[in-house]
Amino acid sequence: MAQFAERVFSGVQPTGNLHLGNYLGAIVKFVELQRTHDCIYCVVDLHAITVPQNPLELKASIREVTAAFIASGVDPSQHIIFNQSQVAEHAELAWVFNCVARMGWLNRMTQFKEKAGKDRENASVGLYAYPCLMAADILLYRATHVPVGEDQKQHLELARDIAQKFNLDYAASIAANGHGEAFFPLPEPLIQGPATRVMSLRDGAKKMSKSDPSDYSRINLSDDADAIAQKVRKAKTDPEPLPSDVEGLAKRPEADNLVGIYAALNGETKPEVLKTFGGANFSAFKSALVDLAVAKIGPIGAEMKRLKDDAAYIDGVLTDGAARAKLIARENMAAVKDILGFVR
Image (tube, rainbow, N blue to C red):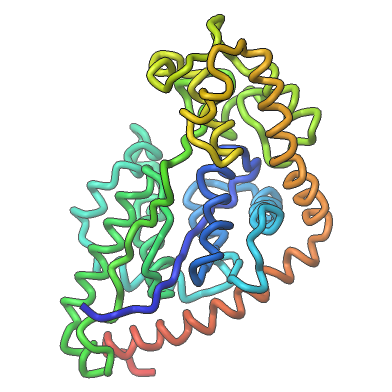
């Protein structure tokens, strides 16, 4: 198989109200990756409109996600941060992939079934074809690695299937145009240590979510120190002290969640946290978690607020990032058109 320069691509939807789960599950990993890889981080606003959006809220959410990237430590001068809709080649390549992907492949996508629910006839075509656009996002930059959570693994597998089918279907043209035996890489999932799955502070069986009606179920990245402290102190627990080993967390979802959050924020494992706090009551542990969460998340929220108040700066970062992304996208899309036999 052809050799491709390593490049990481990842996209985050501009859904607003970013919370601790988004930070520990994705954004903190983006910061780590930029130290070792060439990275492209995209605010995927075209994906957002697969379901109805308020235009003013969408604009604010695009800027909020961008602010969160920067406030968390992603360097826009060294890596590309942009919003998808500024680079038209995403939509252009998605159409090509609509013609490469098979209906059977898309029919197997579980996320469409979950999001569309029982009223599938009313779901948008965009929601159905979403995985083809996601494949285009990645392959437009010929990215070799994608940091993914459990819910996106199936979409990455589809991106690999599309890349492989394109390479096979157009093998002769790919070679004739000087690209060797394959034009697109088969992108690999990038797993960085154990996944941090952050659950609701009110119910340890549910994922932390912006759609939960209770704001006390989550720590928003925009929360100030007082709000963070209050939410941790009010987080649901059980009457028993913390166990001394991980096995003791098995049937205690709220305890497991808080220990997991502490471990992720402090760069430790759960056994290491329990070595320190095993046998302690929750009041003592929560006090330590408050101090840690305020120290780690508080500055991010303050910087996000400062950045969001400077819309011109955020828009400048996105415009600069889009210009740099377009240089790569335009070249690759031109090559795809030549391979397909389009006259340019």
